[in-house]
Length: 456
Ligand code: ATP
Image 1 (cartoon, rainbow, N blue to C red):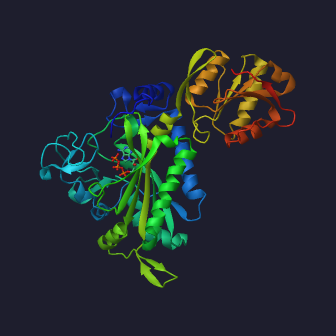
Image 2 (image 1 turned 90 degrees about the horizontal axis):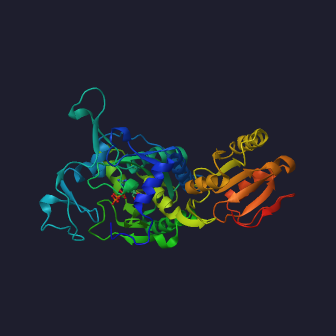
Image 3 (image 1 turned 60 degrees about the vertical axis):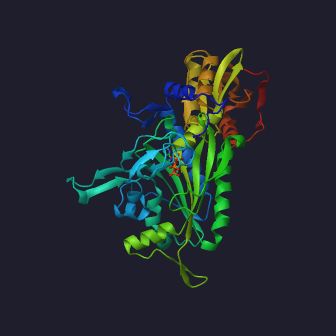
């Protein structure tokens, strides 16, 4: 991590908002919490789900050259010998508190980090992987590990997927799942957790095309964040130096985000060459090559790996969405989430709790919730209810007033522009659908009219 970022939203504000509004709680809080473990609350789970869905849609559903996988967290222990995780993490390690590079303390000359000169932690003789036992007997033969990355599940299933999906090179696998690392340096809220979720792609290519696909995925993945609302100026690409490169990587770039504490990795994109398939072939004794119909040759594909974190993406989307402004003379905290990510898409707000209004509002609510996550709120003034929805990032509020009983029209109020339009209830769903899909212009269906031009 580098210097703190001036002008960025304060992390303490985000933590407090997340806790106050039910996005994220400390794990097992009633017992004092558990270090670097977090629980996602009612709104957090929706946002997280939406991030995963947006990723899956972009990298699996909308592509012909990708398939999904959900491998188990516990894997055969030989996996971690082949991957290098067992050996690589079994030494006494110190970690740089600034750039997070880890060093064998017995090989260090001097006190500071050899890469950036930063302060080092005390040496820890432990493996980064969480160890546990399979079956009832705690003995060496039954040791298994909680996976520290989802990637290995995809490498070991290479042959299964090639044989069953009938995909030809280049093609990839995508997986979302939990990973566990007994991190030495933790902190910065959900940026570095001991239990977290990854969204990983392993893209298999002909060796001579690796550079092209590497560049392709860097661009593709960067654009994904931008399309979902992250400002370009808050993203940067950083190439790994030779010393920093992981043992498996030929080349690696990080997509960094300007977090409240400074620039830090959001996603890593590595050219892993043929390291993984060669290693697993040699450790398992199974050939993991690919028969190329065109050249009639067996080849070992190279792998391009874009590896993203769900929790870090969550934090980045949250930081980028956060805003404070003044509305109707009062301060407002607002999350400008992209509609695809917003935990609640629409809030239905009857102007009063009068019986006839409530029953119409409940009808509208019941209909809308068949399509989206919708909130119903009839407590307190309409202004306070708008503020509540702004603070959790709800893009649209639908207000039902006494006029609605007469003309069967309701008001849609937009979170960002604060514009309000009046639409017939019969056109409400179609209008909201268009707006949630990013329609900028007001959709004025037959019979619809601008209800009020001034801002709320
Ligand atoms: P860092 O250097 O920040 O520890 P890393 O280089 O070890 O990260 P990778 O092994 O490349 O991370 O993992 C891929 C992605 O998984 C990261 O870009 C990040 O989004 C996520 N990730 C990794 N470790 C953690 C963690 N402890 N907590 C939350 N997310 C993580």
